[in-house]
Length: 499
Image 1 (cartoon, rainbow, N blue to C red):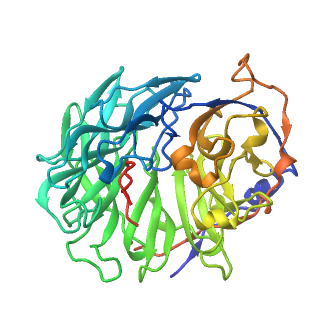
Image 2: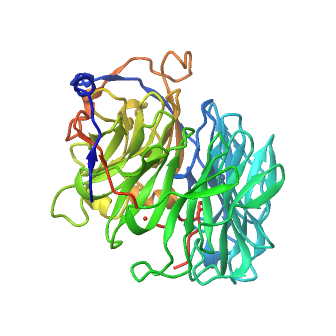
């Protein structure tokens, strides 16, 4: 692969190095456990979402004590019916639903308060015995809107919505398909990308294959997603080639790949910049990419290991994610990284941990994520929620909340420009790996000048050296530009299968 280095001035390098002191001071936070609706767990989405808006309003979903009406294909992994919620200033409000006996979940909220998500309608899909139908929905002014489906299909799922009320996602139709993009072998019909606006759902087409899905829409009305480019399955993946697309003004553009036949879209900003993953030639290794109109698709590189994954890109072009470290371990350990101005900044881990992952970066450069030891990395579970503020090292958020809190904060998954944080954790006595069945969502409100007179706030500062990571945050690498060239984007929903 030919690699071209991005030129960076000496001044830029000096700025990166000298802006990182030995330690920094951090605000304390007011901790709010969002609890449940009578069931064991509550949730925030982690990925392909905008769960926390600039005004500090967050959306998620929480369990009731009602058993799932479709136990063969439970909506949540713990098989309890859930209800979508909205929370602001610590007050949680249950959102309307399409059925009293089925689940709903919210995972996107715009700056002007439009909420997006999915809701089951209580009906069984006639094409999949035991499967509860779900619909893409919006909530506006407290009312739920069923966005429907394309061409008589039985399912639709929302991925994103902008402040104009334009929503995107996927819909099934009734055309038979052995390689349905949402789930080959489970769903028997085509998956199609949709744009919904002013009460009408529009099929966005494909890149040449039979299936596509839309992942994000920005404030300019640009849409990104993934699509089959043909109908011939590849020997390496078992499905047709999947490329990312950009849809604008009625036209769908193929964004290419890094040489492989499988891509995924994981982030999109208002400048039209796209991040995701692409297989390299041979479909053995997947790499993180950035696509821009000027440069096309570029390999973002790693910390010397094989793979990486971006999780978010903000409107300044900062990218939060993780990449593998060099070494013989399989799988390789990975560190949280921030890609900024052509550099990959290693955010490190906590001393007892070997891996970390950054999920979100706001416009102030504050990054949140999780850090874990190798045993938990191997099972894909985070242990310690962290905050990195561009100075010094990451800090364990558990050290910045009041003692005796009702949760161990294991994940921080979103942070807005006011510094408010959304995440999830586990109660005392519950293992980190049980977060999906016994964990709770939480909100952190910073005790700072933007949040004066908050009841229960400690306005003293905490030194950032309380938990120094194993590698300096100043450690950075130049991002290479990979060759032009091609992970499945899973359903933006939360369905667990009975074992």
